[in-house]
Amino acid sequence: MNRKFLLILGIVFLTFSSLVSKPKRELRIAIDAEADANFELELWQEKPNESGDTIAPKPPESIQFKGNRITVTPKDDFEYFRVRRLGEYGAKGFWTQVYSTNVDPGSPLSVPKEYVAKKVFVPKQEPKKITSVISTDSFIIIKEKNESIRYLTKDQLTLNPSDDASGVAEVRYKLGYGQWNSAKTITPVPIKEEGSYKLLYFSLDLVGNKEPMQVLEFIKDTTAPETKMEWVGPNSLGKGKTKFISPETKIRLTAKDHLSGPKDILIAYTCQSGTQTEFKPYSSEISIYDLKSVCKGSFQLFYYAVDQVGNEEPVKTLNFQLGSESN
Image (cartoon, rainbow, N blue to C red):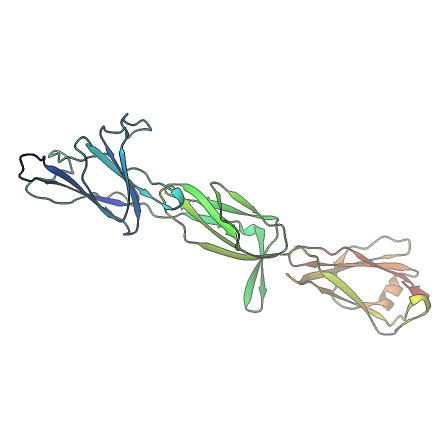
C-alpha cells in the first residue's frame, strides 16, 4: 500500500435485465488526496508479482488520470488492479497492493450485491520532511545598516538534499534567469565570477513530494581593497618630484572596497640593514618623528589592506631617507 496517500475503494456490480448482455462491472476508486493530484491505474489479466520486479507475462492496461476519483469498467478478463501516485518532473510513487476487480465476500474489499459501501484503509502516514541544505561555512554574514548581507567566500556552494521518509529523487536549481538544472546527489554549484546572485532550488522525493521553493541571495566578492596614502603636516614637492617632509609630518592610510568593505590595514617597517617587523593593524596616523627615533638612517614602510571576505591587497612600499628625501 502506498504510504503517501489514503486509498478508498468502492467496487460496484450493476446488473441489467437483458438476454444478450452480460452484467456490467463498474470499478469506483476514491483516493484521499488533493483534487489536482495525478495518478496511474493499471488493470491486469494475471496478478502481478508484488514482491519484486517480476510481473505477469501479459501486459496491463494503463490509465493516467488527474483528480482523487475515477470510475472505470474493466474488460471481462481483467481481474486485478493497482494504483500509484505521479509527481512532478516524472517522479513516481510506490504501487499499492494488488486488488481484485471482482467482489470477493471473504476479502476486506467485499461489497454485498444488495448494499454498496466504501471500505476505508488508513495506512501509517509519514511526515514530509524533504529539505535541501546549503553549508553555512561557505558564507560570511555582514551587517550593513538595517540589513544583513551574505557573502560567498568559496568558489562554489553545495546543495545537500535529505529526506527522512522515502528518499530524494532529485534536486532542481538555477541561478538567476538561467536554465533549471537537475541532480540526484550532493551537488556543487560553481560560483567564480564576482557579482550578486540569486539561487532558486528545491528537492523532490521518491513519491513526488516537492519541497517549497527556496531562494538564496548572496554576493561573490573577488576584488581586493585599495589603500590610499596621504601626507598630513609639512611637506613639499621639489625638483624631479622629490617629496620633502619634516619630523612633524604624519602618514594617513585609508582603504576602500566597493563590495564587502575594508576590514583592516596592516603595516610593518624595516630600518636600514634591519629585520622587518611583524605586520600589525593600522589604528592611527604614523608619525615620522616616531619612526626617526627608532630608525637612525633610511627605512621602508610596508602596508596593505584586507576586506571583510579575506581578499588581500598587494603589499605597498614607501622608501625613506631621513634628512634628505622620500621617493
